[in-house]
Image (tube, rainbow, N blue to C red; front, side, top):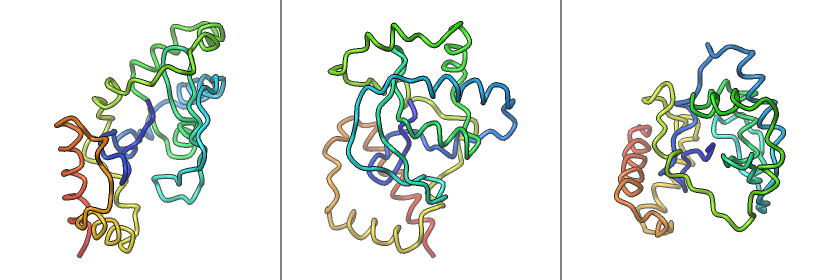
Length: 177
């Protein structure tokens, strides 16, 4: 959960689709508190930049509660950009009287995260797009490298993932004059 569509990961949901300014602040804060109690499971080198263009560099540490897996950067999107997570996850939080520290501690570091469920999430505004926050030069540079075959998308093996890449490149071309 919380892996977002980007130029190199077109198969994930777009963060802009999950913005919900009407989500009650009490729910947002409860969700934030829960996420911040995470167990850090995987540490990755490097950082990523906020997809909303605010300029914030974000850690990409993988976190868990033993049931769900999310990047540490998810907290930024909830706190700064009014992102609302799927009801299924919020209900999971509400069912926990306390953060499941024992379950989180038992999570095996060698287990790979399964993003199958997450890839099916569409958010609250399915037509929204974070690609609009990319600069025109960045879009042109990406499309030039893409058209020349200089970007490795060999990890996109399913038809759905390949279709997501095609949709993204079409959308990027439409953003250019």
